[in-house]
Length: 282
Length: 319
Image 1 (cartoon, one colour):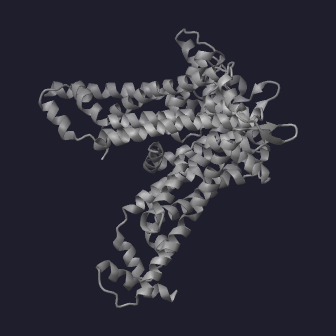
Image 2 (cartoon, one colour):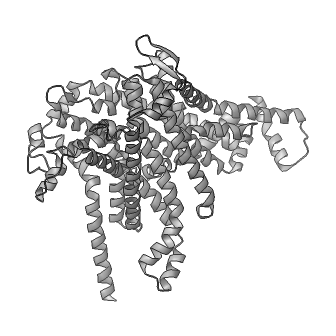
Image 3 (cartoon, chains in turn purple, red):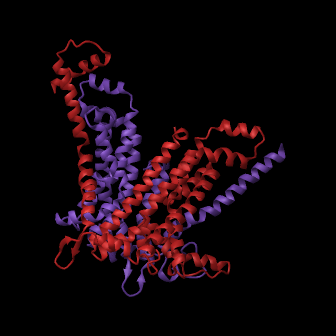
């Protein structure tokens, strides 16, 4: 009996050792990004490397803001992600609700048409979209990013998830809403939406992250640094004479990644559930 | 709004199968209003799909038969030129090869690691929850930020080689030779996203009935046998689907390549999407870029059809 328990304890300890070793490439880059951003260029390449900056320096953070309009770029990313998230939540919950709860002719066909968006990688349509927005004079504006991400293919997964959620909604609640004199818009907004908080949270999380992380689209549509979003801005910390400005670049990367990481640690369950949905795509 | 207050009883009565005391016309009005609401509700999404998916899809086919004149800014019909170019493009074998190596390498590294993590973490405990968070955390980090850190770590005098030097190993200049650059891109991508597959496998493992496993243990099967003979077959549908989702995702890899290697050294890490981007947006070869987009579309379509077929076949396990 006792030997068995000791053995179990050893197995547990062994498990944690194995997990800790595997964890290195997952944790170390983030650690190294944060600590290096507080170092000077000379300290960064010192050998042996120091795991913590002994004389922390904020220079890289100051330079991140003076080298490029980083505050503006931060704001761009923030407002685009927020607008895209709010609009996607509205678009997808309206469409998802209609497809799930309202009977109208052709709804199955129309739902299949919408699902085509899941099938087409955004890389396939980037050339014509660029040409269309170019002829509309909308290149080098934020419009293509906001419109395509909120209404186009990236929003379809959200609509699909909202539909799956609303299908499971008990019909009695809607009937009660009807008896209270609500029309369809009222039932959607006052009855269905308040019940859909978990699905809406999932949609909000993966939509925000997707918009925050977009890279191909901003690269194609934007050319003025003042209009850049964060991912593209990060790649532009290059000194024409001495190559990449590592500590500055890492400071900017830290400011991009750490706020999201903090929110993730606080709201882990919602993040994991929300993002697992994107894994089920297809 | 007063029609609203009259409407509900009609609906309730019809549901209950009662004969309408109310005029039939009002019942129809409700139904019709419902239809109108349905169409209005889906309009934003449907309009978005038409404008930003279906029309561009038609256009990309049309563009693939056109040629761009960069100087005059005009386009002219090119017949099958772009498709002939696709077949005779001397870069194409390398591009398709890099795409295949990346996808296969990613699956071979990602899936077993995700499965291993899921099996190790398929238990309870505070420490376990901590490690789940750790392995999932790169998923929420912006891909460009994650890639930049790895680029920094993979420099000749960067963190990875510094770490190896502690053990007296002289590491290669990872990003400067073809095979190690490709390996680097794969590894960076795996650590970024393996947490997502880990979560999928974890939910798959939790769907395996504990009674079956216990029954096998009682019958004297070892833990390894239970895993190989019971757990693995039961979660095989999850594994297959995850493999295909991972392959489809791997075909869309762009940011990692653009930041880490720019397709190099040479064109050794130029995968299809990156090549498409270069042709269309760096060389302004929009016609040929469109043809490459169609090739990408066809490959994704084939994989999706395979996925549907598998899903149908495995529907018993999925329930």
